Length: 344
Image (cartoon, rainbow, N blue to C red; front, side):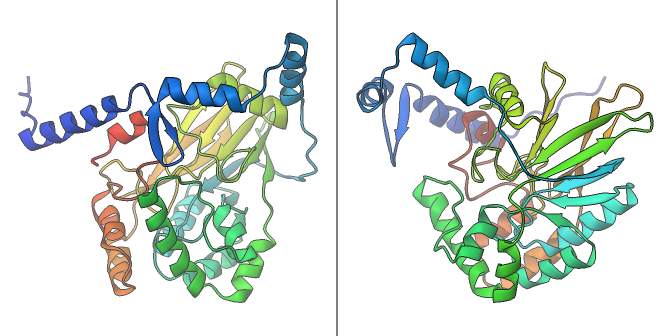
């Protein structure tokens, strides 16, 4: 029997401090940039909101759950597809993903947006997408760059998160050509893709950036309940929703037999101490017709990326994440469970 190696005392102390910080937030609510007692927030919400009688409440729920019409054309059908999110200017990982996806037999390659931010040299991304016929949809970055906004509309609320998001966005905006920005603005906001099996089974997938509701909605594994996802799928009349934006990959099969898949991002590691990034391969099982999801780690030349980032004078905090696999920025948006898995 192998002997268990004792955990490093410094690591134990850091984890204990992190647990204490998380526990300190219990009973509090985020109100703008402040933390306030939960009861105070609830009382203010009640005063600002409105009260519905039983019939009006039932009508509001029925309206929310009603299926939405969607003119988005259905692409395919395909036997197997590869889907990535958040390139974040990481042209090294993008090139590695294209190669890996083709080697794994993907008939079509999809990217769910956020081509810019965090990494270097955004002008190197567009030629790869065009040359390899990657089907791209808009993320919040594409919408902001194409419309000339001053920020990325990432959905952050914490000042430190927004500080680093602003640095990323300004760097990318200054280095994207007008033609590239125009191309981004012409991308679809969503895509529908059909998968089929040899026996003729078929499933329809809805591909979005954040969620079907908002381009910058964060769907985290620990805070996204199954009933909410079932309601979204009912609304969208889809067998699965594929998304990104949060930067963390996860897959939840639902009681109805449908699925939510966050495909992860190519732009930076998943805050797990690994230097690989992540993407998804999808196909239908034969003979059941169930959606088969493989979340795949992707090694790439992360040291070359780090070198280029330093040459471009990007923040050292960004470089540390690429070299070590731990997020050092944009952490405050993470729910408690996801935050606790990281180093900081």
